[in-house]
Image (cartoon, rainbow, N blue to C red; front, side):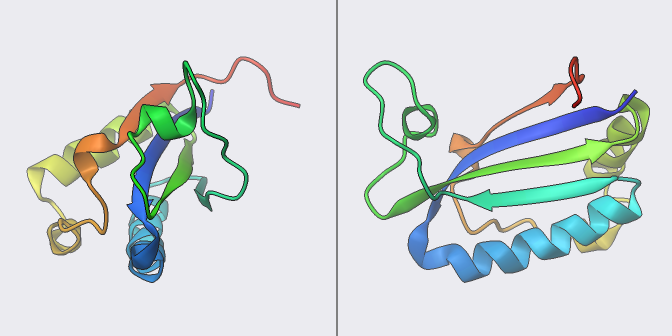
Length: 118
């Protein structure tokens, strides 16, 4: 069964090119590790909310954009193996990418099992 990692972050709009470059390099490494697909999506129509919203979730500041991303894996085992290898430092290319072009402390992420695919 496929497994999905989802991410939500606030990225300074001035860092869009740096973010795309960073995400492109990371996507290649995720694909090498077995990811089926990697999607990085830049805010286009993301309204502010009063109780909940994407901007509230990441504490978006003036001059930032919300980025919504996901990685599709063939299964959780493949995803877990990738992230364990990252943490162990098995591939030095991950360490070269340790400086992110956004505040990683405000990034939200989690793993999901699809329940509907259409």
